[in-house]
Each structure stands twice: as C-alpha cells, then as structure tokens.
Length: 528
Image (cartoon, rainbow, N blue to C red; front, top):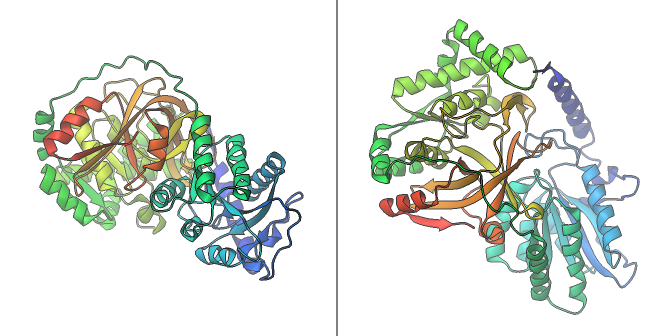
C-alpha cells in the first residue's frame, strides 16, 4: 500500500493549463505547430482553395476535440494534451499512405465542421478521415450527413462514447462512411489506403473496402474454453416474486418515466431522494465508524493515490454510511446516485464509488449516475444469480477482438458476497482527477454476461465475452475489464443502440436471460 498526494500536484498543473488556454483563447489551434506537424485550425483557413501538391488523393484529416489541451472533465481526462497523439497519427498516416495527401485540421464544434464542408470543392477534397478525440463532440455528424466519403476513427479511451453511440446510429442512417475502432495504428493505415479507390470508384466501393478490412483484421477467437464457474440460479418465477419486495432509491435525479415503468412492469418501488437528504445523512454518520471504514480501505487497497488521502477516505466513508442509512429508511436494497451532478455542484462532499463497492460486495446494489435501467438490471440478476453487476462505459477494440468495460468503480467480489475478493487500488476519479474511485483488478478467464433491461421499452439487450485482461492506461475510467467477444464483434459495433451503459456479470446467464425475457414478454436483443 502506498499513500501519495500526487493528484494534488496534477490538479494544480491542470489548473495552470486551463489558465493558459483561457489566456490564449483567441490564438486558435495554429499555436500547436509541433516540430513535424503543421496543424491548421478550421476557423482560420482562408476561403481560397488550398493548392494541390500533386495528383494524389486529398483527404482532410480532422481531429475532433474540445480543446488541444483538455479544458473539461470528460474522457480521456482533464488536462490531457491531445497534441502528441495528433502528431503520432498524422506522421503514421503520411508514412504509411504516401499515395494520399493528408491535410490535418482541428475541429472543435459543429460550426468548424460546417466551415470545412464549405471549403470542400475549393480545396479539391476527395474524402475525410475524422479522428474522434473526445466524447459527445458532434463534428463527424455533419460530414456523415454531407454524403462525402468518410472514415471515422476512435481515439480509444478518449472519444469512444460518441464514436460508439453516435457512430453506429449514424451508420444506420448514412452509408457513406466506415469505422475504425482499434488500438493498432496499422489498422487505421490499412483502412485509410482505401481512399485511393475514390480515384476510380465510388463511395459505396470505398465503404465496402473499409468494412472488409476491419472484418479481415479482427482476429479469430483465441479463448476456446472459459474457466469453470459454478453458477447457482433461482427460478425466474421466484426471482420475479422476490424483486417485488425490493426497492430502489434514486438520489439527485433519474428518469421518472423509467421509474414508473419499473414499478408497473416489475413491481419494484422507486424512491426519489434529494442531495440534501443524503448530505444530512452523511453529516450524521458515526465518527468512529467513519474512521474504522477509512482505515479498512487504506489497509486493503494495493495503492492509495489520491489528494488528501485521510480526509478523502473519511468523506467517502461518511458517504457510504449515508447510503446505508437511506437504504434502511426506505426499506430498499438498491441505490443509484447522480454522482457527477452531486459532486460537481458541491452538494455531495465525496464520490459514492467506495461506498458502492461495499454495497456490491455485501449483496446490495450501488449503481452509478442515477441510471435506473442499469440499476434494475443489477437488482434482477442479484436475485436471479446472487452476483453483483458492473456498470460500464464500453469501448470496442477490434485489434484484440475485445469489448472493454470501463468505469471508475467495480465490485471486488464478482462471484458474490461469499466468493473470493480480487485486488484493487484507490485512485482519483479519472475525468476530473478529484475524490476517490476504484480500479478493481477483476479475474480473467471467466465467461461474462452483459446486459441492459429497459422496462419502458420492454427490451433486454444481451451479449457475452470471456474476461481476458485488466487494461491499465491513464485515459478514461479507472477499471477497464477487457473481454473477448463471443459472437459477431462487427454486429456488436455497428448495431449498438440505446445509450452507452451496459452491466456486466460473471457467469453464463444466456439461458436464464432468455427465460426472463419470455416471462416478462420483453424483446431480447442478442447484440453479438
């Protein structure tokens, strides 16, 4: 176990970067000017045509990001410098595709995308390669809608949410673009070479070639047999009766329509509780219990790398005791909290992550972000299989045939309260580098079942994979469980629907989920 205040220094560095960015707000992206890369900003390009240097295919290389040095708490994390990755990708593409002329540009908004498209004919652009560097930035949407050929690439663990959610949705609407979701730069280079098709062929041939390369370069399954995992299941009928006696608390948010559907379809009451009530419960927490729990976490964790560790752990412990008090008050077994809204607003003094781990490890449910569909999914499987769920923001990496489930909290007892515990670290919440969250090193080799129940849509999404690795990289959320997808990875990528979150459980739940869907008369969508 190690105790450091490294994150305090990191946060000060981030603040200095943000002050620098604010002071240079009018400078534009051209200030980048890295040694081997000249990056022109969309907003500063002249309206006159950029002269073609040869008869090569001309591809606008668009890096879609909120800022070159990240100025907000989102993936990959606040203060992240995009420029080294931009330079790496640009140089690799120019070296790997000498037959293509790449024109790099940074785009930070819909308006930037519109300006680029307005210059399309004057600049004799043949196609667009958009690297999605941040979540939810809507740059590639405009290019997809334009009809021009586009290759959309994910900067993995940075722009993966928008890439997966928006990219799959737009692909079903527009057929002028293909996708690259790979941590291997050679996969991007191979797909980019397809732009040469545009000299003699059309957009349809270009997209088909890119799709074929993605599929051909996705490796075959490598894990032939998952580790033995004896799973004891209750009957679906017993599960459906038991959940009627459970309850869900939603703190500081939550969709009221989904709550009504949960009560109507499943008979589970949902209680909406304010941040203020939770804060009062945290203030009333027994100080001796707070100190005891904070010391327990300090001793158990392999590392503790947070700012002001003693105070942060104590605040997190008080938060957990508040969660327990509210569960007792409302006679509920699950709690979900608008954690980002509560912490960013100052209404909660600590993230609930460590408290969620305690709940999950003891047979209760602690669920992130006031996400009621994920919460009810965890409640159902808790009764069906006695195992905790792991809410995540998934990332797809075709170079490994993996889907990586990423979040800043996860159980450390994935086989249930009586099962073995795996190691974990206590780190800052990744996006803002504040508070305390968890990196859980989950066991590998086992079959996992991932799902999401939508009572308001009468739908269950489901896919499976074998736990293959714990990814440790300083981008995106702390816990990252990589699972080799069982089934059609391309179907999973292109067919992604209904939000980003999914809930992962250890064990083969396929037959049980089919029976559950039939009993509820819900539509079961097998995503892979």
